[in-house]
Length: 473
Image 1 (cartoon, rainbow, N blue to C red):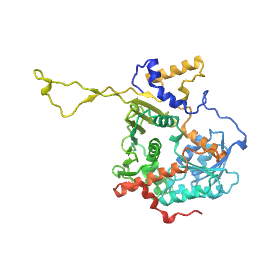
Image 2: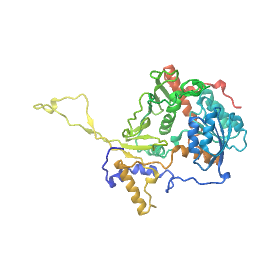
Image 3: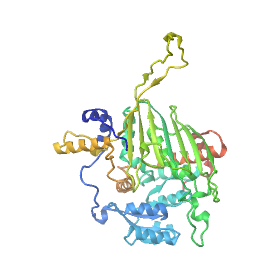
């Protein structure tokens, strides 16, 4: 937010009213940043984790700060990962190389599945069959037949929680954006543009040095079609879910182009993909993921790699989720009213002698305003000092001196919410539930098919795919 914006207090309150109203609708507790409290063991969900590689260890760093769950068991077939994960969580959990031993433990209430993608379904299936709740990272499944089998299995076990790792659903910024859309503040939302661009020339997280005794195909599994959904599964799935959520439906069809053009290290997944999704009311998601440049042309170029722009007839939202080092950002731009351009004539000629092929219109660009979080929303219950503090924060936002920041990383929120669902499965449901996860996995599977077969793939095709293999154990 480098650009200086001169907005008076009165104008700011008027312009930001819609954002404030949306923010006020999201629950928030005022006060100091989150501080872990010690709870009795019977108030905690005892959980295990299967798969403690890079993603699993990342989740454990967040799980160790939560007070409503306690890690009692870890499982990984690769001993170095297992030892590192035990050190990360730091409470001396049991460790296993065979996940069936972990599932046999009576004190494990829930399981976090962070295995490679091709193992998501078989492990999740066994977790459900063992009678435990499950949090599975995206993509929820890998093959078409797994969509049908997992749906049937989970629906036969309504008292068990299944949550998918799609953390944008748990971000206050994205919740505010959705509420603004539903309230009509952006007019008719017609297009979403999303990207996840990386430059892997200097460092490729998918091409790690292979430890002795292992193979590249086993250790760097994301590079190979037999075990990975490539860029579509690992990156695009997050942002396809955002579009489904904001548009309020799944797509009708997808078309796209993928290429293995710039990275030649033995991989057989695409190193760049471009996708177009068409939704029932004519809306489009235009998506791109490349591996040769990380520039993000949103949010005044203050961030890199990933973000979304949500475009409506009355306004636009530019948004990106945060990580451990960068906060989430959301900016709102009002759609300016066009102004007719003056007709320019040559000296000595009458106005009626000049003919134009089209009417030109122009307008000044809208100044971006930050999406306001619940803590910035004005309330009739605020004290004088609290209201003045909020006005001061909001004024600083417009000057680019501060940006609104969520109190907590959405990853923390989604994991904590999972444990709350486990404690009350009949009364509390995940925001990223079974159907959200399966719709997202369907989009991944069909998008890769569209690029492979170079054709338009309709989403109803999934209903006939893999049916012969579906059964519930």
